[in-house]
Length: 111
Image 1 (cartoon, rainbow, N blue to C red):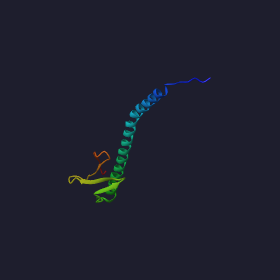
Image 2 (cartoon, one colour):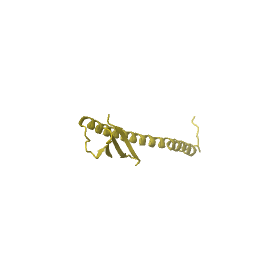
Image 3 (cartoon, rainbow, N blue to C red):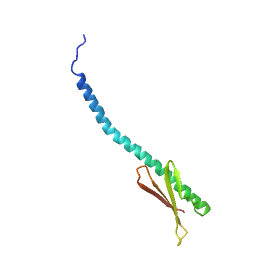
Image 4 (cartoon, one colour):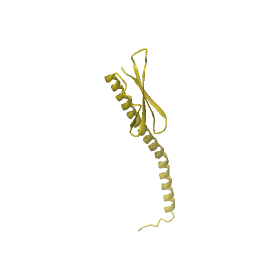
């Protein structure tokens, strides 16, 4: 025979809703942080590719490419090439502002 359980439905619903809200309040910030770090990593990889392209161009031709800025994956990368007059070393720097609007740079010397 079935028993009647009266009066527990509202309490059970509120308890399960509270558990869901607590779980979402813990998981959601972590998910947003992972998404932000993934985007920043993608921008860093694209900046490294732009830097590598400029380094290889200088190494092959012996002169800079003249590219002042490059747009890659929706981000503007500024390429700056500096040559030291005292030696024959070239320094290439790529400057960009990522999704978090923080100024980033990657620099390397031509070997």
